[in-house]
Image (tube, rainbow, N blue to C red; front, top):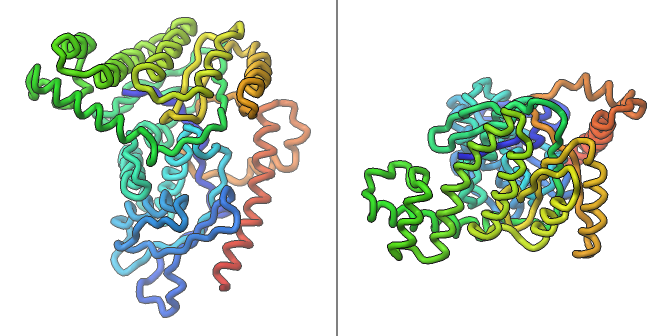
Length: 412
């Protein structure tokens, strides 16, 4: 079970992507080639065919996320046709920061491909296809939360997700704007595929076997998900688990309980209790699941020093990335200043902060609001609108650059 807030995940329509279904018997072989560029990796163009034989590549590893999703959607392509597209990736989500940048890209690509094929899949199916793409093409045994929230996010609401049944148990609406979620990027990048993440997956499987042996496998159809804290304590007392596996299991079973308690607290407007649960969650992730790092721990400690902060914890897959802090809206600027100043003193590097709010999942964007912002954005007083303007302006410049790169690649 998990609790998700959607990060920015947008599928830009024509401005950033063009696609079609092309006859497989096209005389010009180049007409069957797809090309993608990323504004985060200037100068690189990944070229491939969306065919059943499509494989991940070490040459452009960032492109594997797009390739993987395309591969999962080949079943929706009519016989005799080939999926072909030119695609440019532009994002405000920092890479390797634990903010679901890979899932955001995957779900955006899936949304785009569905527009080409004309076959819109159920959101659960879309999320599962994107998860499969990451498993197969990025070699990352990730869970489903990031893809679920990128596909199913709702405005002004978090989602309580049952990862076992593929169901959203509850849309947890934030009752008011008295508190803000502040994201802080430690600028310590993580790489899940090459990290301890797969090790944690295996450690949990060891615990599942121990539970089945002691209490009967029939009692754990969903594995560790069906365990209780008392069962885990029983295994420890019976010396059926060593200290490491005990702590891994303890985190999982208590975190499931915290997710449900957090949803109840937010729904009731009890931000104090919600913050306490966030602090407990970080302690568990740091000490029991051991997926934090010194820089992240510093950010959490610094946040907890500021009046108005009710809770702070690591977010994402761990081993770097970002923290999320629940803070009174009136104290956001003070918190940002404290984090940026003290973090630099301790680590001689900058951290990046930005306020966040729940938003809808990946969807094609209408261009008209962006055109309006490009003309009038600088004169808008609202802080969020001005941020949107500057991002929109950067996207406009990026579109021109990407179009030129793709055009040159096609001509060559």
